[in-house]
Length: 619
Image (cartoon, rainbow, N blue to C red):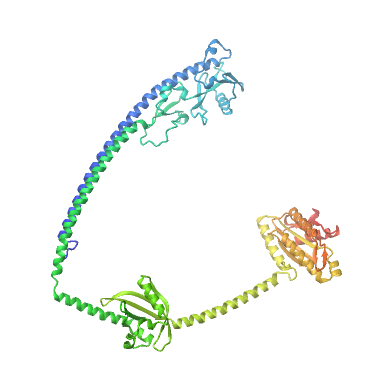
């Protein structure tokens, strides 16, 4: 029998593979656990050495800072005395920056020592705040005064009182760097050190400029409280130099462990490969033995099953309502066909078998093309193809072709569906669609023409009276809701009756058309322009105040009057008079605004024409 996955041989092989994997995994786990423990122990020893050096550095640095601050405190107290003495003259004020010392007394600032230099405003504010807090006489105070160049700069201040019973009114100050308070040999290890207040806030700090923060090992900072001032000195070493031997040791250790792991994996792979070859050989022998045990009876049973399957396939094909033709792929002959194919093509079975496949196509070249695409493994599915029936009629079909094995030979199955009626129906629908689209286009054109006639003035092409009043009313309502300015203007062509009487109504109509066109070109986009009747026009200006609308109408009037109109052989100079009204001055009703603008327009007429007047007498 065959080797099933649950056979004893497979179970034995699986157990051997699992044992190899478990042993290898345990060995690798133990190996890398030892590597991690050794590296962790080495790293802990390195951190302890660095922290011990930090403590030793901190003790020396604290003593140096305390010593320098105590000496500086004594010398600053000498300078705080009202009358100078010999001790004051002998004081060096080390390590004050440039030996400069300033005195603030009764809000008067003076420099006691060092090259003359102005004291920064921030430092002077610190001195005044110190006096306002009633400081203790002779107590030293350190404040941050860092800059971009000196991040460890400090301001040293001390209050000097003449009498302990009276408030201090004198304070002296100077600047010192935290680096200057340390001995030079303490700076050689390039530590990170800082001065902190009681809350842990950093007053001054100095970092190694070459340290980019990429060290693999970091230590915790150490701090010590100074005795001179209530501040703490903190330091943190970068174990960069100590890290190099640690990294070499770690590299050597990890490389050795990796090589051992690789050798173990290679050994496991080799053992599994030999085991697999042995198992495969055993499996092949078992399968060959099983094949030799097949009898002729089993072969005959299989052949009978194949015959039954072929008969069932033909029965299934005949029950399908889609036309099916089975072709020999090599000899290009018909192998079988179902009843639906015979009915649609009009052949009986014997007559159809005498036909070549390309004779069934209206265009034989199309069959050759489909054959080529099928050989190139292209998808031939749902192609619209025209076939020919026995009576010579054309049959439109949707055709698909697929390669398959049929009765132990390479074959091609060709399936098709009659879509002749569908195509005729689609053509009728397309004609009806085109007719409907033409009707809709005519209707839209008619609707557009009716809309133009309903909203546009027949003579000038701008908005007629009704359309202008509707749009202007909507714009006024929006301006009223948004509390925005809104202005209207009424304008009338000057001496238009004289033009009609002298040149005729045709010239007058041309004057109105050209004037309206030129005004439309000059108006801003937000403006609404319409003809109220005769030679009278109106303009709505959302967002315009009365003064802005007045200026705009003046500009329109100047440009219209600057260029005469050419009407036939006549050159006419046309002007207009206009009145302007604004919503916030003349009310929120459109009729009221037009009335106010109309009154202002008539004032412009009476004042000599070719001018613009604003409502309520504002011009």
